Image (cartoon, rainbow, N blue to C red; front, side):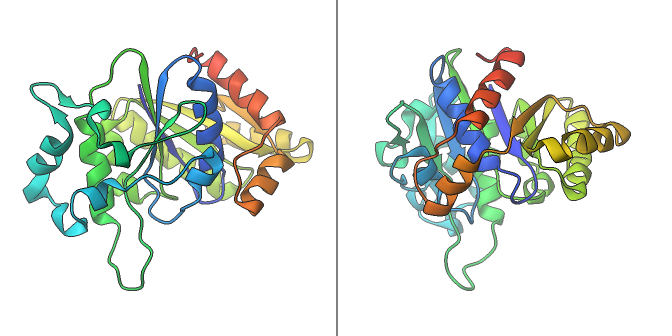
Length: 253
């Protein structure tokens, strides 16, 4: 299964992705793909070193275009099968102490470096041509917002997981992602993150009014806040338990 983790900036996509990976790796060979071109802290949250990016391996963004789609596919493909993650160059995969495999698409770090279009195109081609074994699962931590929707990246996933926080903006974006999933005939799950007792009932009522079904809730966890502030491996207590419960309810663990 290929799960895209989407949502507006600041909802906690990376933290939820890492917590899911830590739970799923007990049952599956778990790959976490970092497709956010701006955030460089995912390896730290996972407790591993950053791998060489796939864009760098392919010779830079100038080599990522529709004219070179077959070159991209053939760089990682198994003959007659499609792209197999086990075939990726070893320096393009970092492995956490739990066995989670981290893959990075690419980053933008310099002034006037150019847009993220080639990075979105690469993850789109990767997901569309990716062939998984029954014991493999892929989580994609996406960039904030909706650019990847405009680029059609969701076409290659199986499920869109929409992370929202208690804000009107997050709910509005969730409606757009739900429409995208319906148009693509794909499943979608809405996960409410950073829940506190003060806002829980209010955000649930607003979500119901907008026709949004919440499939799981993750409590606000100060330990995550401190981990992100210090740039260290993710530490979570309540949020970890909530994510595990969500995955059980979704029949993933």
